[in-house]
Image (cartoon, rainbow, N blue to C red):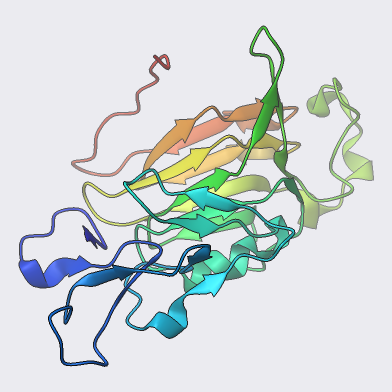
Length: 246
């Protein structure tokens, strides 16, 4: 079992982890215990309450270990991310299959992708690196078409006249993502081509949220402040901190 959010204090806060379900349909010794799905099957979210929640990963998408003793989740195409996040429970693990995403989710006028009011772990299923560990990320989130320059260009040198005002967005915003102790994690993702010439956070804007970036790459983004990333802390929140991966 696990908990849907940090800070749980009671047994009733416990829920079944990915690839597990609660057998509430039979009055037997397994009642209220988490049972693992049949081999090769997974559940998309925490707290599944029936074996009917177990489903086989599509043949084109991999099964990904959740890092616990057993169980995991099915990866899904990048275009499904906005809907998957909206449907997810706090603390869910969302695993993207390799691919690109540059479609506005329709939530915020200032960001292509918005993650609000809940925390989650969002990770790419794989990445490729050479013998020097120079990563070639296989999951890429980018700004909208029309605002991007060629690789290596400096966006603030591009003519403003050629950029539609609706394309001036952060790539990612994370706002009020859970309560104290809740952490939103992004892992193995390339974020690029954000453009906010008069405000902050071209690649990512974080407000009143705790965010953990694990092997995340920022490229070719521009803003008046914080071209790659801008952080607005909240009262009582931890100060922004950058640590070397060990």
